[in-house]
Image (cartoon, rainbow, N blue to C red; front, side, top):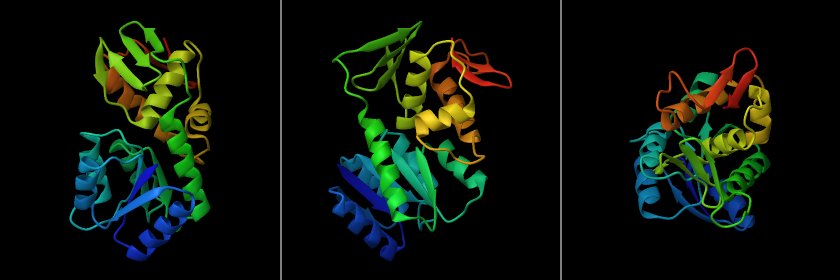
Length: 224
C-alpha cells in the first residue's frame, strides 16, 4: 500500500512517514497543496493524508481538486476542533479527519480502517446489486446510475452499499457512524447528513425529492 503524506510541518511529516513505514507502507511526502494535487494526479496512491492549513493551495482546495479525478481515500489533518472546519472537509470530499495534536496510534488505526474499507470484502467476481435504476458492482466498488458510473468516495460507497443491502431498514445517524466509520464522532453526527446529501446529489434524479435514499424524520435514514 502506498500513502501520500502532505503537510507543511516537515518534522510532523517525517514522524508520520517513519511510523507508517514501520507498518510496512510505502510513503511519499509533499509540503503544499499544489504538490499534493500533482502527485495524486500522476502517481498511484492507496490513501492520502492532507493537512488543512498549507501554503499556495490549502488542504480543502487540494481535496476538491483531487476529487475531480480520483476517489482515493483521504484523511484530513486539522489544528482546529471546530465542527464547521471538519464538516467543510467532508463537503470537499474527505473520508475522515484527525485533529492535531493526535496520537500516532490513532492515525495508524484510521489508516488501516480506511484501507480495509476501500479494498472491500472479497466477494464473487462481478457481483451486482441492483435496485431500480441504481446498481453497485460490489467487486469493483463502483456505483452506476442508469448504467453510467458515478464517482463516489470510499465512505460514500460504504454508506450506500449498507443502505442498499438492507432496504427499508431505518438507521439512526449514530448507527451509521458506528457501522460505516467504525467509531463514534461524539456529537458530530452531522457528518452523516453531509454524506447522505452528497449521495442524493450524485444518485437521485431529483435530490430534493429522492426516490431511494429516504429520511425517517426524527429517526434516521433508509433505502426504499
